[in-house]
Image (cartoon, rainbow, N blue to C red; front, side):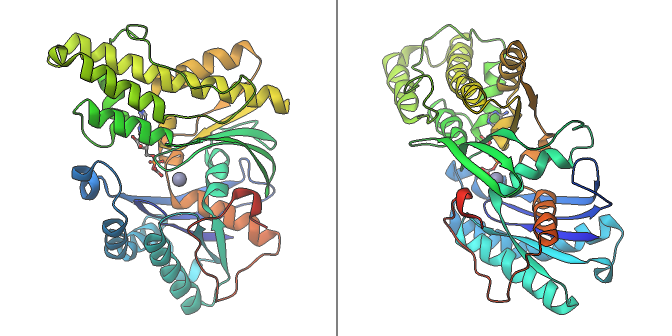
Length: 347
Ligand code: KG4
Ligand code: ZN
């Protein structure tokens, strides 16, 4: 069975063809193609995603991206069995573009349509990694991107509980806003990570907002304010490259440490020994290093899907859609998109 997966909830227009061979997902599905068209150049000068510009870019890109996904997979539309599309949560203009394209394709080809929750898609990403041997439910998931900061208990497919979330900025935003304060480009995460290379992680103490060890919410707006204040107090040093490296390394360390402490507390609280990290911030090397080191000491195994599967993509949507289809779910033609949609209420 082959599924076309379409994702357009934020600033990536993505489409993939995934084939399910047999049995349950781990090791039993194959990505035939995975095309992602990002929009960094559209949003860079604004320092963050501009929804209206994102919608226009999705409209421009959706058809070429779908065509390329089919071509790369080496299949014609007749060889597709089902269409899965992100139905929410996300930016409404982008979601509508993906939904219209998915409905058009499914109607024209007489195929079932499945609406997918974007976060359930992310939870499927480790199952797409051929190297993810031993991966299965249940697990704790840390979903960290420009728009989301969530700790989830994934007890089984479709059975998710939110353990913690950010009370203000998403982690990716903390990187992006910090980068702007430091005069770096967008996206800020990779820029801060690059500047932090060789810097002293303990050079400057930035606050770690941790409301109680076992409380799993986090907060990043205080940290951003602390950086702004600190930079204001040291205006004379802004041109000092070594000092800037220390600032970036210390700022990154504060963010990463909060994520590591909370993720491992979530594993302890739930008794889970598997932790999955997904989302663009999952690319952060220091986060990977710290989590692996601390998790190993506690007998917890951590999965970082490859970066192409950590960030938004159509393959994760295809796999989630496939599993939903196998549960007997298929959408009616009046399926609508939802800007807000809790992962605890997928149904
Ligand atoms: O998942 P993603 O590609 O897009 C969505 O937001 O959905 O995540 C983008 C975010 C941006 O905020 C970017 O700064 C951050 O991920 N990011 C990183 C790194 N690479 C990307 N943050 C920290 N370190 C990185 N290496
Ligand atoms: Zn995402």
